[in-house]
Each structure stands twice: as structure tokens, then as C-alpha cells.
Image (cartoon, one colour):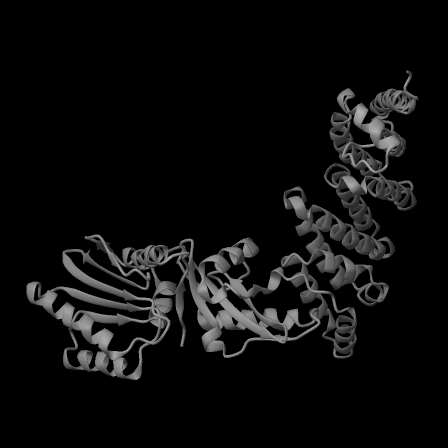
Length: 487
């Protein structure tokens, strides 16, 4: 027994969305509306006339919360019969987004039995779901059925319970898994329960987690009555239960299944935005020691690269994303430096990229980011002895971009603010400290020296000369900022 629900802030909006959902389906089946639909004030009923080729069609749609009973089917059949007197070829379609009662089913079956060829059909939610999936369309409105959605919700719940301090479960699945029509698309909704209350989950038409799932969740809480007081599970920042996760890993390790459990857990954390928890997980030394195996490391690298791609678009979540990426790449570096030096160098290159972005986008951690770049240079020196200088040149170019942005921030108009910041620690100013810029330039000089080879010697000398000039310029800035003001 499957329900389809229509999202909407008001009865009118629900009615319009309901009409859009049915119209889209009918148009894809070759129907056209021929009159202005009549909607109830609640938005749960829509009636209209249409055409299928030269054949007229009478359509009635119900989106009731409860099952459709006999009187509603009988009333529509009576109206359809009158239309049929005027046009014997007229078709009648009754849509119900909820199931029929037994009495209503028997009535419909008796009509079809007595008049097998009558162009009259009742389409329930289950029929509509089946038909939506079978439409001759390269991009059908729905691809996953109830069984597929149910299985995916169960997988999420199973994975999720490894990191929660409390269990969640799907109670009465037939009622708590349903299809929702929102913004012209269908989404599977699953309501789960726990000792802390009820939550819901969202899957798209393929029964996959939508990229914008948190935004959709906010919309659903505003437009779906059933979800107004229900929290979205994947938006709840739950305290990591490290002991539970460790116990699970140890238990599954004995059964040779811990890799599957761990890989699925970290993937779940990254997909759902639990980046602070994911970072905390990899800060735990016991876990770092336990999971240092090749196929697990590959999964961690895959997740880190996905997070890093487009990291600047995370906006207010940038510090959490950056911190998480740093922990993941540090972890994979520890493994690769012992097993695959080329991959270890690649990990360090990614770390330099992250730290350089942090210098620009995460002002409070600029000193920490500078230290991170210095550590990366030291590690590169250790593992890159006698190898290509390209990785140093790459690191230089990446961090140079960050420096160019920082330099643009520190123009003469900002010097007075920096003077205030240097003399009064209670004043918070987002501008970079000139002494920090000097340290960065020194790091860049070190990178260039390591990148020197016969082919690029003149380029390196030229760049170092520019850096020396910049260092002198900023030392002058510092002196001007720290000089006592004269009366």
C-alpha cells in the first residue's frame, strides 16, 4: 500500500501542484486539457476535461489522506455516465493518490466485469507509480519503485546506526514510506523513529540521495503537513559515538566485514555533511591504526578528492570541509609514504592546495595554514630527494595564488586597521598580518630553491628576486605600523 502526497504551503498551492503532477502524466500519455480545472479549497481535489486525440476525457483527481470509499467512486461514475450519453466515446479517469477501500474496489471491478470494454479506469497511487516508471520517456518522472526505495532507506538506517548514540528504525513501513511531489519532481520520503523522536529521510526518483537534500528537507518541512514537526535526520549534528564505532570495527574485523562497514560509514558521513565528525574520526589514533589497509585508504582518498573538488563553493561550511580534507589527506599520506611515494607526493600537493585556500577563506586559521604549508615543504624535502622538482614548482604556483589574494587585501588603505589590530588584541580585523605575509614569502623562496633545475634556473632567480623585494616592502609596512605615533 503506497501513498503519493502533494507538497504545498496552502490549499491553492497544493491544488496547483496536484494538477501539474496529473497533467504531466496525462500529457506524456498523449492527453491534453481542454478547460480550466476546478480545484477544491483544500487542494486535495481537481477535476477537468481533456482530449485524447479526437476522444473527449473526463478526469477527477483525489489526494485524500484516507482510503477512497465507495460513494466517491460511485459519484464520479455517475458524472462520467452522463458525459457518455452526450459522447459515447468519452473516456473517464479517476485518479486517487491513496488506495481504495474494499467496497470501492468491488464496485470498480463489477463495472469492468459487466462492461469489459468501457473506457473507464481508476488509477491509484500504486498504478500511477508503475505507470510513471513505464512511460516511454528517456527521462521518466520516476525510476525507483517502493521496494527499491524501502531497501535504500533500510541501508541508510543500518549505516547510520554505527555512528549514533541511539538507534533509529522504520516503523510501519507501508505508512511511513511514501512518494512526495515537490517542485515538479517526485521524491521518496521515509519517516524513521528513535527514542529521541521522529526524523525523515529523502531519496530522489532513482532512490538516491539528492545533492541538495538539505535544502529540499527545509522545503518539505514548510510544505508538507506530515513533516512540519519532524526533523531531517541527516541535518542533525549528532555527537560521534567513537566507542560504538570502534566496537563495530573490531567486531566486523573478526568476521572480515569491518572494511565494508568502515568504508560505508565514512562515505555516509561525507555525503551527509558530517565533516566535523569525519575529521574527529580520523583524529582518533586507534582508528587510524586499525584502518591502515590499502583498499580502505583508496576509499578515503576517493572521498577526500570528492570533497576537495569545488571546495570553495562550500561557503559557510568551508572551515569544516577544509579541516576534514586535511585530516583525510594527512591520513592517506601516512600510509602512502611507506608504500607508494608517488601517491604520498600527490597527497602533499593536495594539502598545499587546501592550506592555500584556507589562507584566503578561513581567516582565523591563517597562522595554522602557514604552519601546514611549512610542514608540507619539510615532508616534500624528505621524500623527494633526487626526484623531479616539479612538485615543488606546483606547490609554489598554488600558494602563489593565495599570496596574490592576500596582497590585494593588504593595500595602504588597510594599514590603519592593522595598526589597531597590532596595538589592541580585542579588535578583530580580517586583514592578514604583514608578518604572516613575510613568512609565506620565505616559504615560497624555499619552494623555489627546491624546484630549481637547469631548465628553470633563470625563472627561479627572477621569482626569488621578486620575493626578496616583496619581503623588504612588507618589513617597511611592519615598521610603519609599529612606530609610535608622534604628537
